[in-house]
Image 1 (cartoon, rainbow, N blue to C red):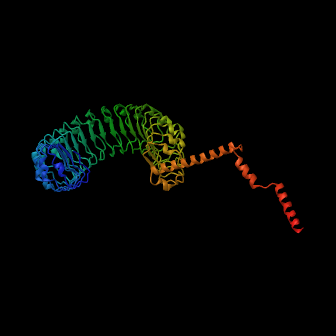
Image 2 (cartoon, rainbow, N blue to C red):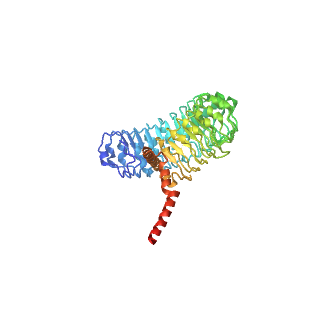
Length: 531
């Protein structure tokens, strides 16, 4: 039963009558008290009470003998009441994130022998009790964002562990005993203060995901190449400066993060990473696209943002599976034509938040037939190519912070477009048929000197703009219809299309004869009166 986010102040009595209930979601409400009647849920297996206002845990919660998964995260809990949980012997998953916990209760370690997942992230823990080694079936432990300065040695005794998360702590080293975690699959220790990694980590042969980002590493242990099952490696925000060729022996590696590592070159053996699909080399010092990358035929995502690149090698065309290419913040003086050879590309980021700004996009941009998202913000573009309409799959067009003066009418033919970002340009008008973009969900126009439609019309959002354009077309169609009807009347009278103007011209002007006749008439009258 799902009663999450219902603004509940208490557990409804109608719910408490459902004694055969097996799963109950009450998270993200305003519940302050767990009622004693909770003990009637004798069959319940899953109970989520996270993100409420619960202070104390009632004793009756301990009577839920079949409960297997309990979440009490993000509550102002009185931690002394946590001992009640130790009575739920069948518990498999316990989540206590963000409850200001400073010590993990020893009683829980003594009695929760079946526990497989323990979530303690976002607390104030500095250590774990020695008794935690009693949790011999524990497979996942989450200790992210606590106050650990030392890696808890007790963890190394839990040989069944598969996932260990100690991100965002204050660790300065890893113990050599970490090598005893033979079954570990995922190890997250990013955003700490590690300056080296013990060789024994390479004994963890089942390791698939290793995140060491945001530390103080200069090199990796020699045995790193022995991690034959390593699939994802995070080394971003370390000062590696030079990448060890040993990494190139990780044949199973498919994800590699090397953002902000001081790199300017790659080892020649980098082409051996034939399984690599995602590569992040952003915020480094590359002056061109490393040729070693062009040999990675399986690559799908490549981020080279914020480097010093001024040109792209033609060999980039060999990246036949590349769908995401980030080259924002580099030193291109013109749009790199080589990019247009990437027919598989779906997302292209070429904004210039720093460095030289582009003044135009090539007319043959349509060569990127599979493109779905184009980000060209922070440039000096004054116009977009009229051929843009040939990008039939385009869903996102980000042109913020340019100098666009006018949009091509062909933009109205981008029928797949969902987001059009045009803030801070020089647009004074919009194409009359822009509302033909039926799939458009987001239209942003702030910071333009718009006159047609006026900026006050655009401010409420897309719906108001659409109504304005429809009304404008309606008025134009009506004026055209009236004009056509009048011309028809003139033709039927045999006066021709300009008859009205000619006729009004004759009526307004008097002939010389008329003027002369009228003059004589006046004189004769006066003579007659005299007679």
